[in-house]
Length: 249
Image (tube, rainbow, N blue to C red):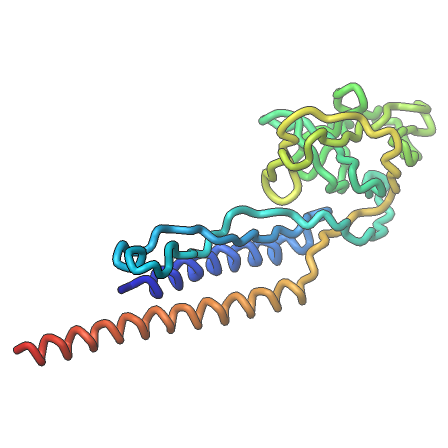
């Protein structure tokens, strides 16, 4: 029977997926506000061989399944940059809104800048939106940019220019990631009145490289053990077949 090898193979595939996820976390360790992903494992029950079921033994076989993923919502550390367009969100439920070619997306990566025409944009060049869903644009003469904790953006020359729109997804579980820092809300959002913005700060990734490397080493060990086990089972079956064949002949 190859049941043992099949169960081991299911765990082998799951460990391979886990290593890929850990590698992605490490690759985004320096991405502002990136949230580390985690794998959710579970059992997948399959029917056993009829011979075993007839004998009342092992009614089902438990395979390993990487059922899904989840994101660690722990906030990253805030780092001071001194850039007036760098923003960190103190409220863990508040998200910036940006307009992308695919529609409005949410992000907590606050490393914004000014485009050539004075529009405040994210690292992709997509405009940051105000509370009315419109891009925020400054005059070329605006200096002394100030952003209050509630998102009110002002300049010395123009006074209040706009209020940055920050929202909370109605159903956080419906959100889907698009790259390392953008999210599709997957449904309705509501305005956040107390976002607790901090100007001149960036929220770093919550990835802890040493911890991720430790997880990767453990996953690699598990992968190697399972690969060796499957090879040993294959050799055992081959040896058994050879002995039976030689005996019968």
